[in-house]
Length: 223
Image 1 (cartoon, rainbow, N blue to C red):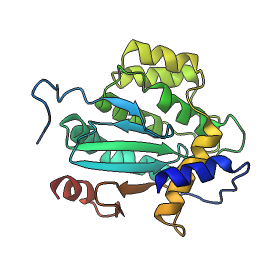
Image 2 (spheres, rainbow, N blue to C red; image 1 turned 45 degrees about the horizontal axis):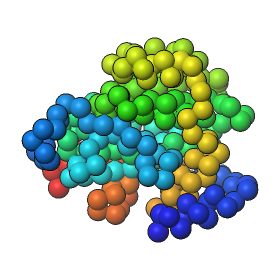
Image 3 (cartoon, rainbow, N blue to C red; image 1 turned 180 degrees about the vertical axis):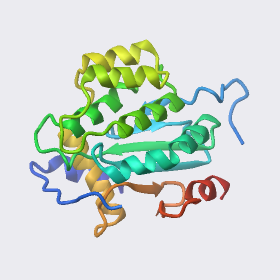
Image 4 (cartoon, rainbow, N blue to C red; image 1 turned 120 degrees about the vertical axis):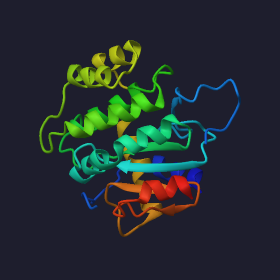
């Protein structure tokens, strides 16, 4: 189903999005559970933090200026980092940019930085910490952090200097317009009435998660 959605979305020349903020380690013995990888998703429009054989996989649809998304990171970011780090969880971040008012706005630049971070050396735990830093330093309606400021956040998150340099330079890592179109189509497929952020989707069980249950993440990894 995902492939057909991606083809449809890429064929669109204009996509009008009217949404707002709403609301034990397994595997080979040689694998180091302290270093879960960070990769770009197969379709090219998500960033995956965690082992591909983690027992639970989720997607987080998020907007860099969405204050509710910042709340999610503040409340559950540490737990996400822990479960990614011990191999219990794989998280695919799917950014959206519907709160931008210009082409190269706050949300677009932060989203691009997420893809710049997937350089092959960053770990899943470091990436999750970077996400927490970015969403904790929002500037809704403003320009948002500069490339140098995002690079400082990456360094604070413990990311390797190779990734820090890529973020500081600020080159394009993804087609932002296509990313937004594809990720919105995925979000619409999950729920065509509630297309707000944050939305967390359980890929393993094929269902949307109730993130307003304080124990949703604990229940998820224990299920």
